[in-house]
Image (tube, rainbow, N blue to C red; front, side):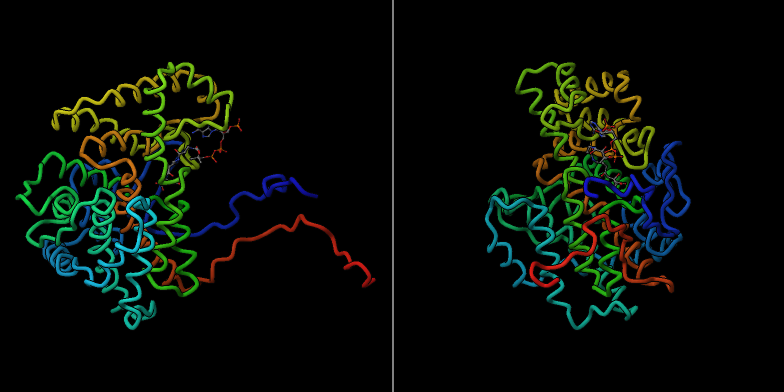
Length: 391
Ligand code: SDX
């Protein structure tokens, strides 16, 4: 029979996996990385310290963290040929397409050092990915605005170097804004891992075939690009801007969502797991006001987002479906206030998620029971039949 879905047969997410990295309780709005609550890590830790925690299961000692940071700084340069790769793409290319293509291209420089069964290569390529993805991302940004690429500055930490690569220009010195630096660090931490979401499952699936880290991460970037997943942070800003430019009332827009007119959704709302408030959304909303105030930015789209949230949370349609803001609902307003173009928002999500992808890839590849990923299927197509004239 056609038109039936797996749910009709009682199949629900049969492709379960075990993991020791991240714990989520969707009803209680709990998120922990290796047992540490996300609220404590976002408030007190750094992107690289959390990356180490996700990769190795424990917080690093000060010496381990210093060595990790130093190793990453020494791998930020891209091969000069790879810089020319960007000139082959149109300046109108979406930065997420540039990112996944460039990461795939990156693997061509390390083919003799990318055997996933070699622990030394796995460590080295983890460092290379963490060091070079921000540079590739910044080059995608610079390309989209027609500005010259800068070289990484090894005197700066991870986040500050990334900000300088994006907003520095050759013609003048660049001063990192500490408010932007701390806000971006916190946002990246909030994105570092999230259990078996679509892009992480993609990274694990590709890794389970024996593909190297670069190829697996490139696949994850492509999965994240989708507007129902990481692309939602870009879609939220587009949605808010459209409402504002159209002059449509928020109430009227919400009615259109409820009537599912033209398939319109309230982007940044809903989640496969959180059927209560996404703890990350709460933290992002709290810092949005503070960051915009400290940056001296007033953005009417933030007020519009809050009005939209207030109306939706009071509306039975959303309450019955347990739809709450997710991590993507408020992040874009902060990224915009920092000066990132909307099409860079999902690229920022990818940089945040990279440590989780790398940690989950290792877990999948090192799992002694690991089999090549192959979701179950229930065949609901035509029964056996003969080709005309063969019966
Ligand atoms: C991320 O998995 C992860 O962990 C992802 C992530 C991570 O960190 O990796 O958290 C990041 O991807 C967050 C989600 C970002 N996406 C969006 O904001 C896009 C808008 N959200 C929806 O597309 C949706 O909520 C999903 C895809 C996120 C979740 O969909 P579900 O849980 O499969 O819910 P569903 O599609 O079964 O919907 C249930 C009902 C439906 O209504 P009915 O058919 O029952 O009448 O809720 C409705 C849906 O139409 N619904 C929405 C809605 N989300 C669900 N209606 C309006 N607006 C929405 N956003």
